[in-house]
Length: 489
Image (cartoon, rainbow, N blue to C red; front, top):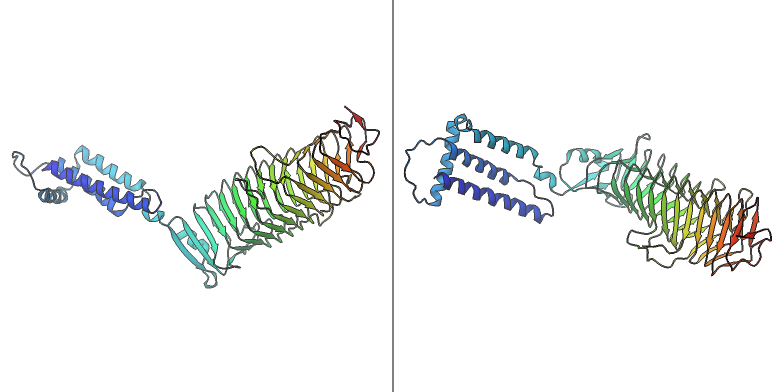
């Protein structure tokens, strides 16, 4: 009888466990225990207790037993356990089974927490996004926002989506000392079709957070529009980021950003900041698909890359930045790198198109990228095309055009200016029509000319050397109007 009880209990337990796994698999999740699984575990444990309990019957030779009788014996075992209580469980295996059962139940996740949940928050009825995040179980959790909620929201759980029900739905942060939306270490968070305003920063993800902001408007915040910091990563797509009191988008603190198909305009300081050992793809996806951004009307630089950071750009328009006076389209400083893969237009900024200090710039094709075409344009900036200083490195090629840049009393204002030991390698590049001259080499800077260049029709010299010995060039195909003071090396 004992063996039959054990077999029936084991079969029940196995069927219940497999059924639970199958249900979880159909839902696309991991296997989680259900009430049926818990019942199976309990029956299995009770059967083992019954087997080990002292029998009230006189021993008899084993007989063939009908399965229904075995089930009856199982029920009898449960009754006996209830009757004998602690006597059966005093046996050593009873204690072990009870400990294992209770431990497994304590460690198993709640099945309800793994079920997808959709909740609608009606802001006009004073519903609260924060309340839903704190009280509603289930994952993934999707919160549809109707109207404008006035609250500062913090997300610390994984797999959360906040989605606006209609254009204009969103969140305004009433406390100017807090971010309107803060994402702390959470993974797979999505903000979609929202209007976010107020607060300190509009959206901030930090502490290793991974999140997406798309199809949204981030505007009129007390500081920055979107901030990705402290080893976090973000996908920022198809947003308008405008009118913020500091910068539009900031990626800092060893973080990573994919910034594609956005309009970043009219922010008080910078349009986009990549800083403190961070990296960004701006206008191009990981798979090499072009999706350029419009970056315009910033008070300072359109894009700033600094403190050993890097950025790869494709298909962007960076224009009319530096409204507070004399700022660059793009600045690359303090051992950082910039790559212009192609189809970037940097134009009509109030300082040079690109400024480099102790950093590097490369244009055109790059290893690992197959995207084409690879031409770029730097034109009509006030303060010259490219200004490089303090041992910067420039590798210019593949159809770069630097043309019609204007002079400013605050900058060298050549098509290309290299200062303080900076180095240039140039091929397949056009430098024409610049107001103060074509290329300037100053203070021990050097240039290597390769084939395919058109450096001509600039005001003054097409190649000029000044301010100290050591500025020199090598290679043939020199500009037609070269300063006699330039020497080959």
